[in-house]
Image 1 (cartoon, helix red, strand yellow):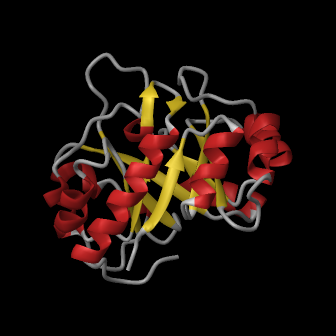
Image 2 (tube, rainbow, N blue to C red):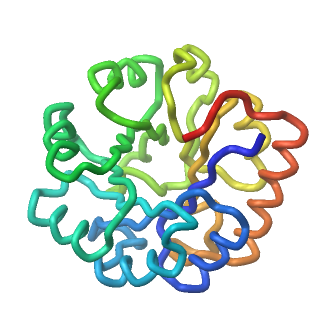
Length: 224
């Protein structure tokens, strides 16, 4: 069974169309000015409209305030809100109550203690995203092209629904799935020719690698 596949940091019609054509379950748009993948909400909305109803669109934010979220939701109309900052459980509960949208909460992982931080969010976040901690000096909470020790995820209860992220590419994808049994994966820099520039051939190669890995090592569990 193939995992959910999210292609994140999209900025062009060609990349959106290719992601949908190859079977992406989710596409992500990043609203964070320091990121080379930053996009304006109205442009993200136009791109999301190209595949709306076929692929779930995800709005990725970092400690966004209410005004920013209101603008993103109004102009993009995302299916899912992803929070990649220091948002508290209380903040996410409020956002869910006001917007009625599902929530994905991202956590940066380096060691076992980092996984313990998800506990207050269980039952609040609809899905988690586990990324690698950024390198020293990086301004980006994600999209840095680095991995973490995937074996740490073996300690998670099966009921914890998560998306695996952090440095995934065609070369390491099979190992990542073998080590984690992840039911969902997220890729950004791993299908780019330069920061923020999606490469259509690299996207094709990544989807081919997922298909091959899924045949060799079926992913267990249900997906959302």
